[in-house]
Length: 403
Image (cartoon, rainbow, N blue to C red):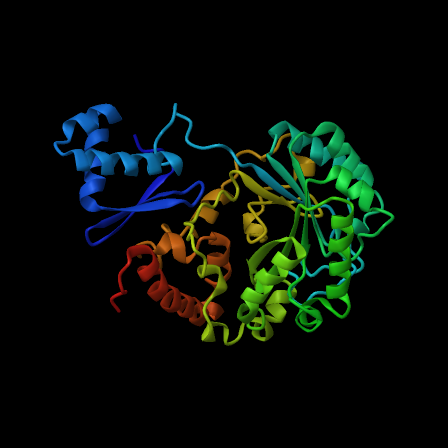
């Protein structure tokens, strides 16, 4: 009965059934959970289970729970556990026209290497055989490539999935906007602020106003599939409400990203995240909490500007490199053990977290857990644990945590 993606958390006489593919979940009593276990053990259909219950009220309640389980993918359907959501992040350039303080790839105006157009096409051809649901072109700043529109035209001709562009938004103008909206399904713009002052701390002077002009231009041309993102740091976590309000006013979709202590972000770690826990962490103040549903290295990959393949943007490290797609005939690259290394940081597997009743929710992204598991960040890890556990116990289990 239960889908292969169903994971179980337990606390006292309560159970949480969650879908590790989409992060959705439901909490029930142990008694109700045992009823569904009984159904599975006996091989009953749901109709047979309802007939086995004595009380009409029980039948109605169990029916409502079962319908919710079906809705969030906890019940097996024709042996197909979930709809694949295959995604590739393709860093087609390392160069960038900005010099952001938190850039995890340390993008500069110049780069030691840049793929030729033919190399990009060769990689795309291999990706198209795998047929991902979405290909996201990232950088650096993708619009700094002279052949960016040749790449977009090639994708438009040969690929039927979603194509998105991650950009700082400063190079979109009247000369190129028509081509961009012709070939793209979504444009993701990093802004990291709610006004000139807050944005300039991270991205430099004048960027905020330029992004506003870009959004207005896209809207003028009838393109509205735009996201704006900001990192969560000691400056920005206090203004999440302002950020959501800004997106509402601009007609864009807000995304709050976790700070990644890598690249220049690692150099500026103290500047960006000190005193972080003086205020609530914004990512947990959402009406619907989602559990860990990481598919890094299985359905999600990152290809860097040299063709190296990684499970995602957080695990960019030599030991997690799955090989180079330019040297491989197929994608994903076969027979690679790095996925098992990544799974060590799944909250249910990580030594410090595996027995915690809220582990799937405390670190919904294993990449963040990996980045903050380093010895020099052990104090930060414990701060996260202590702060979030108290909140999550009340949110997930409706109880106070026992210290």
